[in-house]
Structure formats: C-alpha cells, structure tokens
Length: 306
Ligand SMILES: [Zn+2]
Image (tube, rainbow, N blue to C red; front, side, top):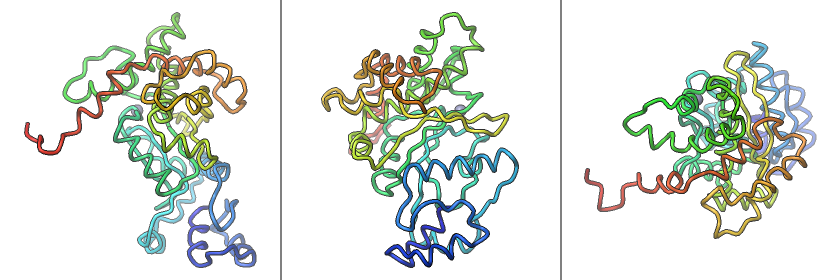
C-alpha cells in the first residue's frame, strides 16, 4: 500500500532496506511492491488492480482512513494515481479501488469528460503531485453517455457538458452501424473513455511531455456497476500519433490518423480489444466547436457580469 511508502519516505529520505523489511512485515501492508522513494506506473496499476479485486470480493481492507492517516496526509499529499471518472454515485474511486485518504487524486465529472477544467486538474495531479499513472475510468450504465446515445433532450448547462461525449457516440455508431440503441451504449462508453484520453493527450502539452519522458502512463478502464470489477482497456490506441504529431496540430484530437491509430493498437497487447477503432474514430471526429467551447465558459476578468 502506498501510504506506507509515503510515510516511510518522509522518515527516511534515502532508501533504507532494513526499514523496508520492517514495513513489509506489517500485517496491514499487504501490497507493498514499490521502493521507498516512489512508485512506478506498473506498481501503481498493480495496487489499483489488487484493491479492486478486494472490493469486488467484498474483502476490503479500508486502510488509511483513520486519525493516523489524517495526521500524515495533513502534512502534504502524495497520491499515487490521478483518476478521471464519472460523478455517478456508484463508483467512488477510493472505494472501488479500496484505497485510503491521500491515495487517489480524483477528478469527477458527469461522463468522465476531459474539458478545460478537468485537464487542468489532471495536469496538477500528474505534473505537480507527480502521480506516475493517470486513469480515465468510465462505467457501465453511464447516464451521460446513454443520454447522448438516446438523443435525450438536455437543458441548462448540460448540453455544453455532453458535447464532449457526442464525438465518441458518433464514432461508436459509425463503427457499429448494425447495433440497436441499447446495444450501442457499451461501445459508446468505451469510446468515450478513449475520447477523454485523446482529448487529454491532444490538448495538454504537459501530459504529452510526461508520457514521452516515461514519467507518466495514461490508461483507460471501465467499471462494471453490477460486478464491481474494473476492466482495463490499456493505453489509447492512437497514443503514438497523438504524442508525435506537431504541437501546432494539438488542441484537436483529429490529429490522429485512423491508420496510425489501428497500427498502434495492434502493437499494444494490453489495449482494449473492443472499441479501439471507435475510440479512435471518436478522436478523429472530435469537432472543433466542442473543443473550443470550454474557454468560453470561463468569465474573463472584468466581464463577470451576467
Ligand atoms: Zn456516468
């Protein structure tokens, strides 16, 4: 578990094998897999996988949610993962991954979309708090995606929100023209996860830099609200193209050519078997208006009147 490493790091800035052995021997720290300095993306992923397995089996440890943990985290936070997920009440990431206070830097928004505010928050998590892993977590039965798939009428500020989901649904529909509306929803949910990852990579130079330098991995996943299990989709199938395209083209996920995306997917065994093309299509069909919308919702200084 991470907190151990975190607390250990605080006490002993330099790696101390002897102290480490003592930690491993503590019964409440079953998953310690990383060194005392910092976890890797692999270690962070394994921690999430183990935690989700515990949760799905009903064997949660629910560690690090006590006063001792509050004392430690009050001095500063050192989460090991940044998670962008839906606001849906059925999937709080700390619970479904069985983690404690200070472990997960979370961004939650309906439809787990990656717009300006979400990307800015993610940049804080991966660039300032230095989490080695960023997960975009969609989920079965997502109301935001379902609303778009079914063409539900939305009001208020919701249209601006679901605009981010529309390209993913269109891509899924294009990829699976024979599916009924209900059948299309799972594919659209998966495409929407990759849509968000594509938006993050295409719009954030900082995230791209961290991924290229090997300091960050960005993965997609879908949580099943029925079984409690998280299905890992892997990296964005078009990641290589998103990372290498010219900076001038960023800000628009369509910078990722379809052929390159599929080629990239083939080379990544951990990538999703389904929805890759759809997701990639989603990125390709991402429309500029939706991407440029976010800045508009930010009131300019001096123009805060309504
Ligand atoms: Zn949702």
